[in-house]
Image (cartoon, rainbow, N blue to C red; front, side, top):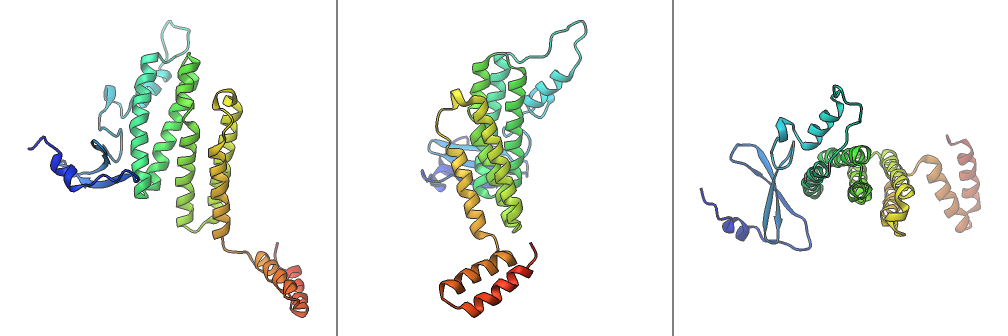
Length: 247
């Protein structure tokens, strides 16, 4: 087996303004996710921990520490807490998941994006509960708005694929509530910019533009057009229909 990956890089040109990803079949016969970088490539598992490792025989370090936090400690009254090294391991692992859900979003695998972004948000919650250093907590929390946006985008995209515009708007509203909660809690560190919130507002407008009009909305549109064109008999008919249309 050749160790030099130059041939792969030569056949797969790096495009700096795009997320260069693809699915290949690995030597074990299972699909692998590859991301082309300027200096090489990343290869990740589609499921489980992206690098395929099983720390302490658990699927991830997060699962391992979560299990530790639930174990009763004989003769010890103090609560479970994460050491700085524990947090570093969780952070490096979260970065792996970030690379994967970024690649999956480019491929349109929205279900797995939701799975991985939800997982990282749970990690942030876990660190906030069990880390004693506020700066360490913030080193995770500073990325929460971005992850919320990514998850919201994936949820919204799935709903739009199903042509469920109402559900898509619900996902955006949930994302906006989560962002506002984060800004309230970390306003002193998050700064003045609320770019993520503005982005979700813009998505909501796009969804509303694509949403089919209800009967009442269609009648209101036609009534306004009739009045604008001075078609008063037609306007009177439309006004009557609007009064009878279901709310």
